[in-house]
Length: 552
Image 1 (cartoon, rainbow, N blue to C red):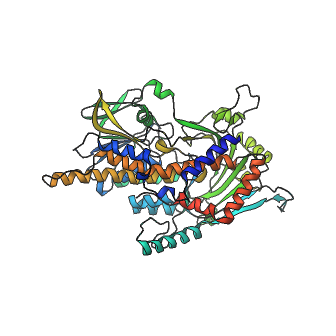
Image 2: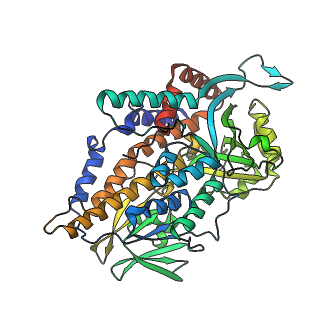
Image 3: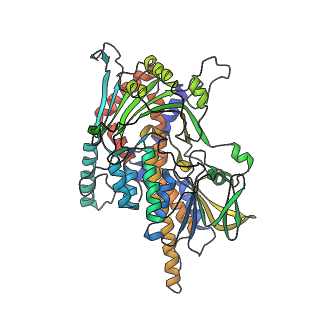
């Protein structure tokens, strides 16, 4: 990676991070966000409550948002949820960690929280290792490498909760903790498909809402006083709706409208998603039913740094009472790119066959399975990068599912924002199109926060819509009462609350992704960087700042 790119990312990180407390600052101190808030207040007033909402995308963001909207506070809201896939595939996707997002889910539904926590594994800690610079650390014929840092996540979160409790007692501060009143540490690992299954099944059983599959959004229009969704090249229509919420991933169709005010062929052919030049190959090995000893085991992340690549292994909950799954991730640079910049087209470097087959995976769909033949290429990268240990290769060789995809993210400094009022023939309608989850702020996965931030978006966005409806109800019940906020200003409050933490995480995750896949001298710098950051406590602070929820 060139020095210019690394320097740019580091500068961006410094600008966003202020003693690891940046995400807690009020948006009113930032002029670019304050001006947006002022413009929101001049939007046309809407006096009707929000009654009908369409959610586009049935991933973690879309499903959790439906739950959040349909709490008792949203008793008068009708929600439809659409997805372009034929069904949800529980076997698609990797394993994820849940921290602050699970706190938000508990605010949405304690029942859902319990189901998800019981299906996952308690996350104990993180260990980072690297190949030795000199000498060796061989045990039983296997090079174990040097240990760079070890983070006891359970202890770090308990200590943080104690410090917050003391701060509340001293100055009356109020914040969410990642330790419950019963002493449970809110840090788990779970398969993405398992989490989606729980959210989907509970949506049906608790609210009677079925996902409408095979519905690919192709356009939006205005009719009968609301926004109408057109699907499958205008073969089907649904609506009208008061709000359309895009939870449809990094190449969001809804984001095309928010960015440009249209969903024409030109907007559909372009995307604001940035390809990082980093690829992820991951393998999932399902647990065996006979291995009952693994059902109650806890999880631990182990990083293995090599030259130009690194690997990560862990175990993941696959459901209550089910044997745990093992996951191995290999993160490496695309030979055709230097960071996000494409190399000279005349490059003669070979691209692995499986990567060609996978092509670009711009929608980060989690479903980009590749043939088992890619295993040999993966093992070759592990060997050439001198990744220590044998844990990664064991999981790869015994994997049941194998995926390869590119890492994409959104520029958090886009002027387009996450909210756009729908216009009909140049006139304001008081109806809105909004983004959440990856559609709003797709981020590199190197801090494990994508799902967590999506869950937090769901809680905050639903809370703002409920707040607006409560104001409208109060106006109807009290003669002469006036509303203190219009709908657009409350939707903008959601954007402002969630922009700062997600932008900070995006910057830090991008920096870590490029640093962790560095080669040559940069790989040596990375090893030293992680060792020092672990010793002085910065690694723990970065983890805590990302893990703690920002929902109030």
